[in-house]
Length: 198
Image 1 (cartoon, rainbow, N blue to C red):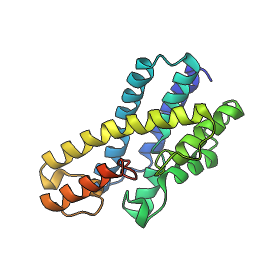
Image 2 (image 1 turned 30 degrees about the vertical axis):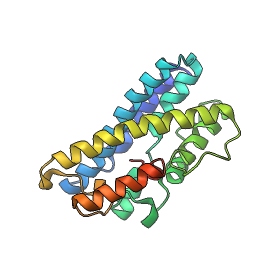
Image 3 (image 1 turned 180 degrees about the vertical axis):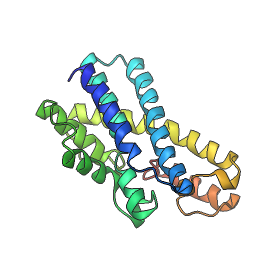
Image 4 (image 1 turned 90 degrees about the vertical axis):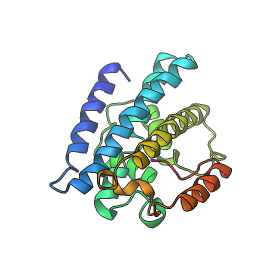
């Protein structure tokens, strides 16, 4: 894979996101949230990759993974109006399926395609116990960290906004009651924040 491929993927992603915007501003806030989240995860991934001195090949793959990690969120929200996998569909699996159906990765070497698709499929898995490929495992750990770093930012911003400006899908169906939110986040922290991927 080359830098030109990454540029092409970024253009494809932006064009893909545009297809989900509509005249409904409430829905647009949720789509915008995911689009902006993706770009921040890409920045986090760049910093993480640099901090551990990833080689050029792995850095490109890490950038692709960051760009596409939440691709499934867009069709998920379009169909179900939620980002809760438990009441809709697994967004990791849907993201990999979307890349396959659109033949987005077709010019990449097959081995790299397989790695990217595996990372997208499993980035939101509860555990990584069954991942044997060390390169896939590394990319999974990186994208999960890059993702979680931004999740805190998303929630901090969300609860600082006026109610009428909030992207409705962020709260995952929870009411805005401090005790309820505290119990939810405490439970997630005890479990290592699985399933809380935005």
